[in-house]
Length: 486
Image (cartoon, rainbow, N blue to C red):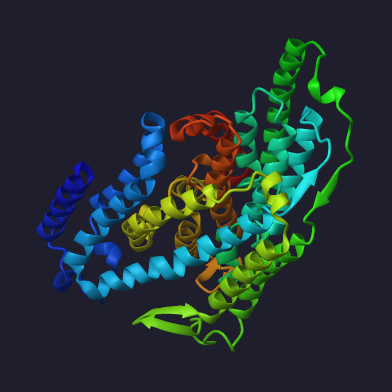
């Protein structure tokens, strides 16, 4: 009852504010860009959503576990109902369909497919979490992320990584660095690695242009891997001294390493291939208007078109997930400690995030060029700061377009204009690297955290994790600025 009363009061208050500000269908109009008419305080529900994710698991963990869907729906309705009343049904429906069908559905289907398929692959045998083993696994994951995506690499490696370190006492820092490296920084080198780079590829950035990011990517990865290894060695020695050589694992028979469920790699290739295929087909005359670049598809409502390329991608991913479930023995998933909890949590929370993010992205899209950005360092930090809390894919696109508006005489020729390489590199690095700053900066961050907590690892809170990123990532990004973007 208390939640319902709060919802009603919040909706009435925001409806009044929308109306009082003169934001009605007549004044907003379909011809006027939405971001210019929305006030800055329209992002309040989005801020409320973020604070709920940050605070409730800390102060009321059990309540949050059973009510996160209600909280997500609450903030979505607090924004959307007043918006619907103020702007009218036509614009409201158009915005809802855009975020639900064009943004959320491809996003969650891709995560679902990778989560399902990777859960059918298990590394068996005696893999013990020593500092050398952990360093090797993080290094492999970082490299792999650019070729199967940050989500694919994270879902593939997080379970064997946690199993190898099951006997260790200090494990939360391992997962934090796993998120830094495998879930974010590792996905820098190809458009497959991270969604922002894929958007750039769709808009004309050459597929292998992103390989230019190898120097800043390697710089960050080497430093973070070195810090991780030093910390891991420190805790490992303390733990070994405490058990004084009486290690349970050493008294058991060593089992050779082997992989079960290896056929799921075929389904993983199907998923990654579907993403590449959609990018290639979107540049052909059969699937896109050669003059405008607009994709052909199924018209859902007015300007909302669900592209045939998206339909193909979603269908292939769902088929791969279905085949994985049907062809993989239940024992593999049970031994992998596979549950649907992490993907369910991501689906619920990001549904609310995507809806409440509508005004933030609209304002950024309409007013991004007014920020006065003219230098690579400014683009790096502006893109990165917003990518830490907003979806980094549309944020990348906004600042990519802003960089193109500077009118570079030569550089990378894209569909939004010619962009100086230094500017595009700054935007790309900001979007990919700084997704590691918060749990919501990139979807695999949240999934890895959920899987770790299912494995009884006490993870930092939302603000606690930000403490780690402020301590280790922000100084590193300052170095990036000095070395690469000044």
